[in-house]
Structures are given as C-alpha cells and as structure tokens.
Image 1 (cartoon, rainbow, N blue to C red):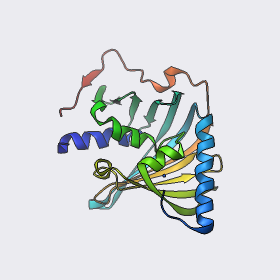
Image 2: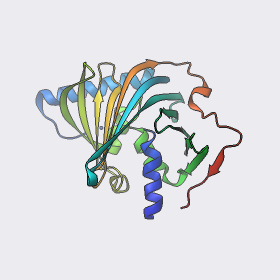
Image 3: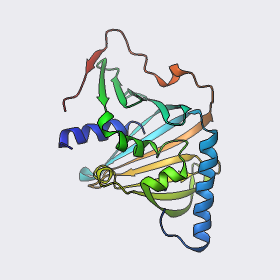
Length: 232
C-alpha cells in the first residue's frame, strides 16, 4: 500500500474508533472476560457515550487531548454505523457507514471522504475493537493475553492485550489494550502504532439504546459544504 494511502487509512480509522497461552486462574479470568463480551455482543444494538481521546506523539513526547461524544448503531450483525463529535477548540465530526468515512471540519466548512472499500479486511479488524465484539472474531484476528485487573474512572475492569495476526494490520497497529467492564463492554482502548505513537480513548456515561435513530449516526452537513476527496 502506498505511503500516502497508508497514512489516510490510519487517519480515518483513528477517528472511529482477542488468544494467547494463559494458564491456571489467569486462563479462567480471560475466559470469563471473553464470555462477558459474547453476552454483551448478543444484546448490543446501539449506544451513546462521552469520549476523551489522548493522542501521544513520540518524536516530540507531546500529548494532545480531545473530548466529545460517540454514537454507535448496529441494526444487523455485520452493519456497524458510527458518528463521533469532537468539541472545540479543535472541532471535527466523523461518520463511518459501510466502507466510507467522512470527516467534517466546521471551522473551514470542509468534509473529507475516504472510500476504504479496498481495505475492507483491515476495516473489519479495526471495527472488532469497537462495541459488541464477539470473542471468536477477536480470536481469529488477534493473539490475546490477559493484562490483569485495573480500575478506570473508579470502575473495576479487566485489561486484555491484543496483537494483530495480519501483517498488513501490523504495519498500522502494533498492539491494542482493551479495558472490559463487568457488563462485557470496552470502557477504554489504547492503540499502539509503530514508532511509539499511541491513542488512548476513554468512554464515560455509556448508555445502551436499541432504538437509536439513524439520524444519530449521520452527519448533518451544510448545503454549502466544501467536499474534498484526498488524493491516493
């Protein structure tokens, strides 16, 4: 994949935002965690949550933080739709539907569209890290090991570590950590990129909503918006 196309894919999927050999009691805890995730996947239809995303740039050892809201809807097992709204001072909105990602920048009234259809296999692996993940799908795509018990925003969680099995995915994503709560949902995700950069997404005020309207996961773009399709 050309370098420019590669960076565009990573940029788009950054906005969207599991089995290793574990013995004894640790194996039981991992199995219990995956079982909770399976139960959550069966029930999952949609949700809304607040999101805080910290991006670390290794070369300058600097962090930038964004906050906003996320809306996720899954009307059918293989149909995941998502919208993320990031608040000022650097406002932006992103919509994922099918194999298309749109990123809207209100300040410049510009929307960028990424057609990721040719990388559908890679998209599927990224989406497995979202909400309503099935353990079998994760085990097919990742090597998983237990990270241990942890606390996120005062809530007890189990941290699991995932390493992509696909060489193509490894060029974009070195490792992922998920913090799974008692309900089997990921309340925090950390994405490690080659080179030392990483992104940490934390979710709060999570509300399940099986009747989330289609409008909640779609961008409401102005009529005079400037459309851009980044060059390949």
